[in-house]
Image (cartoon, rainbow over all chains, first blue to last red; front, side, top):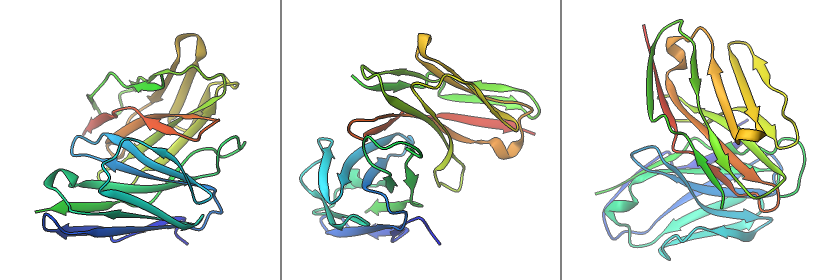
Length: 116
Length: 114
């Protein structure tokens, strides 16, 4: 059973298109994240949600809109894709704020987005 | 401000040598968590270890060991008798207890040469 799964794994699309990446976790975690990893391997947090509520929004362009229909899912929709959006996008989940125990984030396998 | 610094961008060592990856963090919080992750060439992010701010015990797990020192805000990672399979990018990360934000250092790319 995959703990954090995201689809698709690869996404190639033209500039100006709109695309979505889906993420699901079956760990019962309260917090989910989206991270962007650029070509230099820098991992930057984009958003986090706790129990469907937006907690962190790290000055990401408005073209990126996360949606959390329930605490097990966090999808990322990107409008009007640009060349600079090409990157690997990782979904992750963790227990939640002020929780003890296994506080690390569990990551999905990543979605490699290529904008041409 | 919250910050993680991995000053070593890239390291190359010959197989069987020991290697230490450095991590220095900044935080104003008293409760926080530190992690190391490994990203092999296949691309997934693999969790290696967690350490919380009130537990300064060092840890050894097989060939891996971690040295956490609050006095110097460092959380270094040592691989003993390195192997080619250890070649990967290694990330140090910091999480605050109050808002769950996890930030990563820029990573250290480790090459183990046969």
